[in-house]
Image 1 (cartoon, one colour):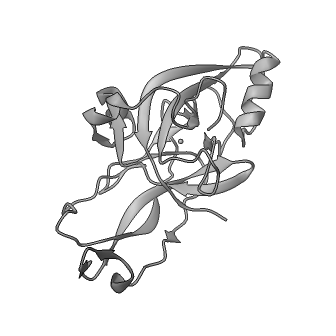
Image 2 (tube, helix red, strand yellow; image 1 turned 60 degrees about the vertical axis):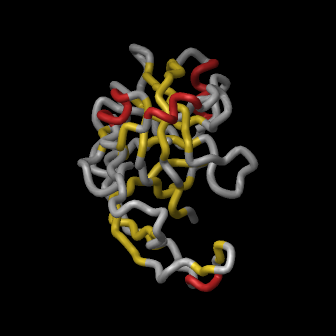
Length: 211
C-alpha cells in the first residue's frame, strides 16, 4: 500500500500499454529519504525547491548526486556561479527488480499535486498523453514494502523525468505479491490477477540515483 511522503522542500513513478506508469496509493508508507541534489545557484534558478513524494514500507536511504565544477558549464561567455547543495526528501521505487531513488517536485492536475505533496504545475497539462513513460502506483491491498514501479530509468531510450500515472489494484481473492517491474504488472494483468487503470496524472519525478 503506497502513501505520499510528508511535504518538504521537494516532493517525491513505469511501461504499460496505456503509457502512464506508477502507483499512487491511498497512502505511501514512509519513504522520505534524505537525498542531496545539486542546484545551480544561477540567476535563472528559483530560491526554493519543491518537494515530497510517494514511497512504501521500505526504509529510506540517503543518496548523493555528484557535484560538477561550475567552470565546466558555460552560458555564452559567462560561467555559472558556484553551485550549492540542498537536501531533499526522496523515496525508493522499483525498476526491473532493482531500486532507484526518485524525487517528486511537480504534478498535474491539482489533485495529483495534493496527493504527492508536490507543486501544482498547470503547464504540465499541455504535455501529450502517451509521450512519457509510465509509473505504477499500487492502491488498496499490497504486500509490506511495496514501492512505486517505474517503467524506465536514466540510460533508457524512453526515459523522461515526467511520468504518466497508472493505478494498480489487486483483484478480490488474489493474494498480493511484490511488484518490481512493469512487465510483471502487465503479465499479471493479462492473467486477470490485477487491474491497471491509466490516469491523467502527470508527475515530474526525476530519478536522482540508481545502482
